Length: 104
Image 1 (cartoon, one colour):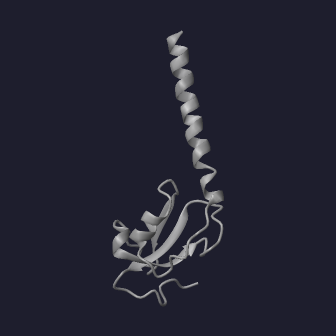
Image 2: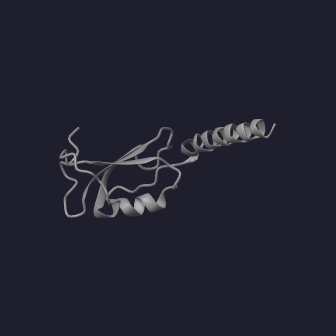
């Protein structure tokens, strides 16, 4: 009988994890972080929120240390409700300009 209760505990724990992760994006509003440091934005946003940093220069570089990058664009945009994850930050290295970095 102890095998059954261990199995039940494990499956209910997994279900709780899925439930708690899903409502988070719906309740959040994207702050205006355009032009700001990507590392600070990462710290400012909820640690449970799924975030992706993309190189806006088109060079496809890895963003290993967000603190070395600045934000040029975000999806969703500033002050918009976060309804989908991951939140995407388009970034360039702090020494670079955002101008022309994200051709659309």
